Amino acid sequence: MKEHFVRISDELLHQHTLKLLAERNVTIRDIAELVYFLQSKYFPNITMEECETNVNKVLEKREVQNAVITGIELDRLAEKKLLDSPLQEIIFQDEGLYGIDEIIALSIINVYGSIGFTNYGYIDRMKPGILERLNSHEGGTVNTFLDDIVGAIAAAASSRIAHSKTR
Picture 1 (cartoon, rainbow, N blue to C red):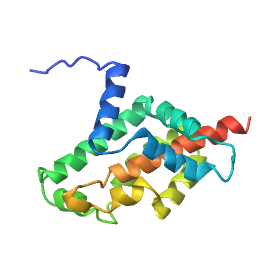
Picture 2: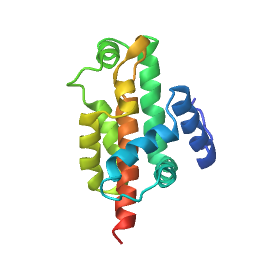
Picture 3: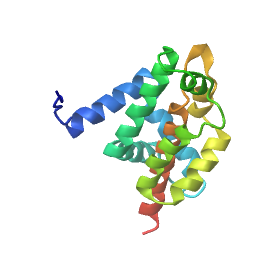
Picture 4: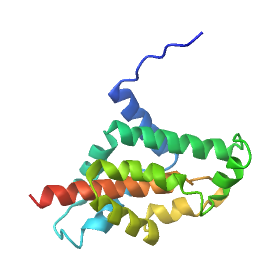
């Protein structure tokens, strides 16, 4: 028999997304610092508050929330060693040729246009701020998806700023 599920409200999904990020020690401020890193040389008067506002706007999008929830859940399952082999080893070790983590990140970047691709590529290569910590895999923490998702959120927020300032 097929189960019926109730559609989760936008607000509940948003709050759950923020809770998951907080549980992984990622704050809006952490992501806003990445946005500032990406945009401050183009917009010298940009403020951290403006960066935070744009991160929050990105996190209000359902497709972004879905990506965050999916990626974090896969990271957590890999930490608990609950995935079947070889997926378990691939995600746990963050294998370079896996690429699905970047595909989920690209779904976030697409929300605000093609400029997000260059923002994401740059920040993913540089790994500033929180991205360095997330990519370190310290203490058995698996952030195979989360580091790319956080970078993508920052890239999308940066794109949002660039689009709003060029009008």
